[in-house]
Length: 332
Image (cartoon, rainbow, N blue to C red; front, side, top):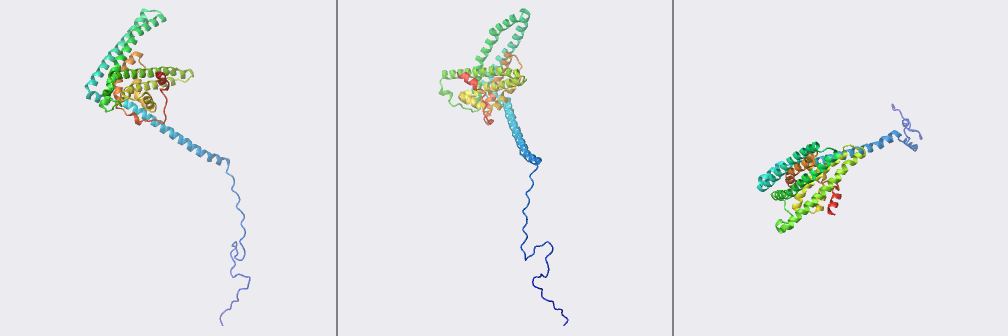
């Protein structure tokens, strides 16, 4: 009594019906309809997605070019630094009295010759202008003076400086402990003399052919309306020829072959352009023979700097065949 009897749930009825929207446990879940495909990206989105890799490639290419330009400028600056290594030159001259005497002879001879060349050329030019009338008569007079005075003096300077430069190169290499492949004592005296003459002839032929080709190349860009490019190419050519002339004496003492010299030079062309740049800047706008006299005066210091330099580490990524045609012509 007092208790309320609850009747059991009728069959087929649930005590608590599921909430609205829930799946009933007594019936299978409804089959969901497949998801609709995503709409294709718009044309603007496709262009933006394709532009991103292109921009990153352009940035990477610009970064690589900038890094390459920085490495070129660094090697050029290293060459200029080694070409102006006057402290090492002074140290070598201080250690060797024979090198000092040889260098003094070079300075005295070329200084006197440079002064005479400037004085005589300017005096003769003014004298011929007042003495000879007419363009062709003055041209013939200047040509005769060139053949009878300037060229013989220049050839005499080359002959005298050949022995002096070789002596300076040998002395500098000995002091810097740069040993030749074949000891000088193992070679006959006349054989050494013939080899030095052959090296000098080959050196002069390569440089002369190279400078003639560079002089012709100087005027080609101007024919197509491109200013200043020819002068820049000629300036760089003079830098290379100056470096080659200085390093040739060192390499000849060590005993390198012609192919080894040119291969070494052409795989370090940026460094050697910087090495010869200071002297080229000074002599670029001078007259031919005055510039040659100053060139011959400064070359001993460049030879000593070349003996003390270390261009082997300044290797380029690719070889530039600068002296291919001059070397072939000199070999023939």
